[in-house]
Image (tube, rainbow, N blue to C red; front, side, top):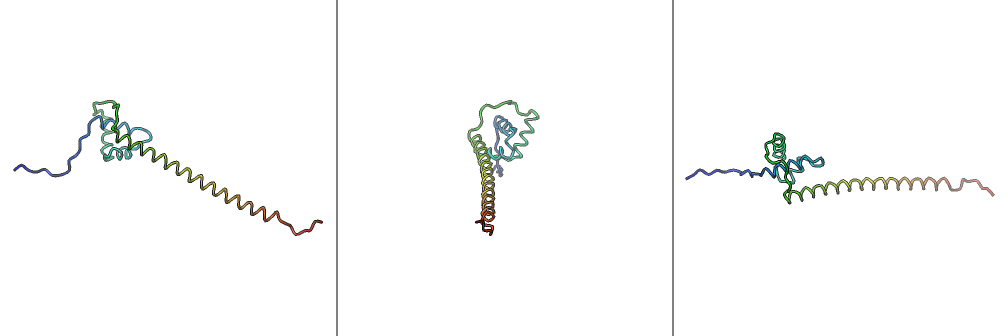
Length: 123
């Protein structure tokens, strides 16, 4: 009876996939962690691919097509980041408006208290 080999099987990725992943990770607005997450791989693996790419171990230079699912995930992540940034800006603007409104109310109270009668009768 042949011996059974147990354990986890490591998936093999094509050079095309690796090169595209490396290219995405080199874009200024992307992080290794974010790209790895979108591609469902470990960030260490992507870092190793980046090193191998620098050393010229991949025969391919550029890949024209990206895996559709990965591209969509990255676009979704970019959209989420943009929306979170927009929410943060709007919350900050809202806080500034609230402070200004409190300031105006305080100024009105001061004016209404000091512009009343002074107690002198000017007839």
